[in-house]
Image (cartoon, rainbow, N blue to C red):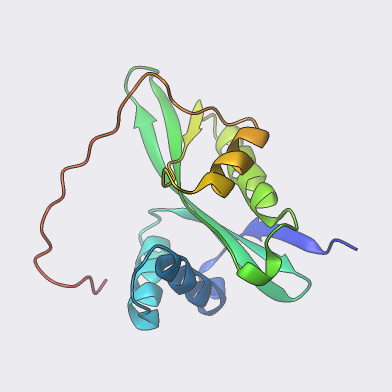
Length: 157
């Protein structure tokens, strides 16, 4: 029986979300740093800078996604960046990621957004398969460029 539930996270979920967020960062090669991960998420909540959804399998938190608001000047409309999506290894292949993505799209749609965008590593073929199966389309029109700004000090808030 599928007991996966997804809901919008609140600041009261911080202690539950932080270990998942720390695991997400480790998945992408960062060292574990639970206090900094907690501070980062706390700041996003406290400044209303992102929207998080949390997935549970029964009583256990097993995944999350984080949306950052943005706007399209060309479309004159709200957009969102689905920046983070993570499912604990124990809960993979149970539909958790699909439910998290659906919650994010439903949220964005309810606010009148015209698009939700995401990016993933070129080597993350499992994620690409999931996104395409859910109806997401890979951008064939634009290249994405980044300019890396050297850090001045470690993030604390």
